[in-house]
Each structure stands twice: as structure tokens, then as C-alpha cells.
Amino acid sequence: MAEGKVSTAILKKRRRMKNIRNSERKRVVNAMRRSRMRTFVSKVMKAIADSKPKDEIIKSFSEMQKELMRGVAKRIIHKNTASRKISRVCHKVKVAIGEVVQK
Image (spheres, one colour):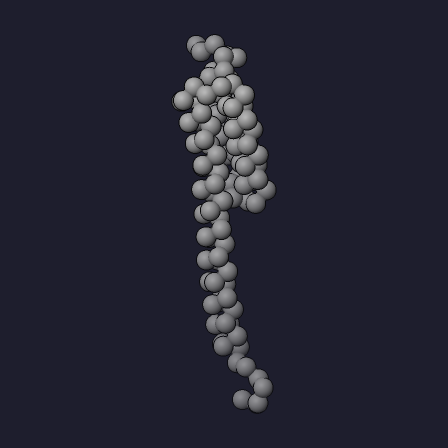
């Protein structure tokens, strides 16, 4: 081997190790983001369960909606998944604040 040259096997190993480090970093960040989204959903559900004032429930719902759409933008969850979650919570919010009469 000539001086200054690195074999392709060593280069491939370095690349693999770098990919492992990067994927671990991304996994940790994505887990934090996913947890944050779940926290916002549970805040809305807790506000509904505790019979909080109407404006407080709506405010927490709005924050939850923004956080879920942020998760979509960061590619943590799919757009349809976020829309489905928002729709289900929205119905519960409407029932809680008295806009919809339950069947």
C-alpha cells in the first residue's frame, strides 16, 4: 500500500461507524419529540377530565394541534396519523365544552 492511501475496507468501516452514531442521535431526538407530542395530547385529555374552563381546554387543544403538526413537519409521524388524532381529540373537546350533543 502506498503511503497516504487508506484501504476501502477501512473507509467503509469508518462510514458504518459514523452511520451508527448518527442513527443513535436521531433515535434519541425522535423519541424526545414523540414523547413531547404524547404529553400535549395527555394535557388536553387531563383538562377535559378535570372539567377545566372552556377557554383553557381550547388553548391546550390548540397547542396540541401545533405540536402534532410540528411532528409531521419533522417526519416523526405521518400527516394522516396526526389528522386522525386531532380529529378524535377535537370531538372529545367539543363534547366537553358542550358544542356537540352525544348520541
